[in-house]
Image (cartoon, rainbow, N blue to C red; front, top):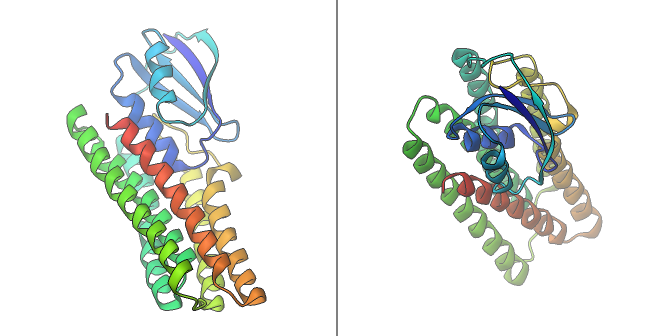
Length: 264
């Protein structure tokens, strides 16, 4: 056995961990993955060369760099599928619930920032659901599921960006600031709960470690919407909300592109 360590400079959340796992799942010879989110690294235990592994990781555009190679005689480590399913299921439920709540709140408040944040939650939910559906399925089925998920997310992000342009040009109404702040704060709490739940669960395939980096992107998105709400209140214009929405839609589109990369 050989262990090759890679640094993934843009691996910021559990959804991206799942993308890496699915990306490497079909590579013959990969036996075990150990993630360290605090260091943004993954140790890949494999029986063949690492060139194919490195090429697959680079296709995800997560700033993959090969750090070191070492001999490892531990042998393979079987995945505890039941434990992994429970962890992914809990993450899916939390993200799906907040997706629904933010979607309704965004519509009622007239906030594109909240709508975009709900789509970000939906994107994470899609990755968790995709990971659950992919367990034990064929390579062709996994790639087909990934492609469908990626195209849906990309389409929704594109529609969101079009709506940003439309509102900027033709709609000068301002969103409800109080709803934006309250709902974003609750979503932030939901992300922290997800972190705590997943950090307490281990599977043979991936260690779900407690680290602030674990939900860094989601927490930044929540903070961005709160900041946009404050700016709307101070400036009396919807522009900060539109800017926040555009930024988040672009983040979701980037995630969709990574999903499509593993479906090729």
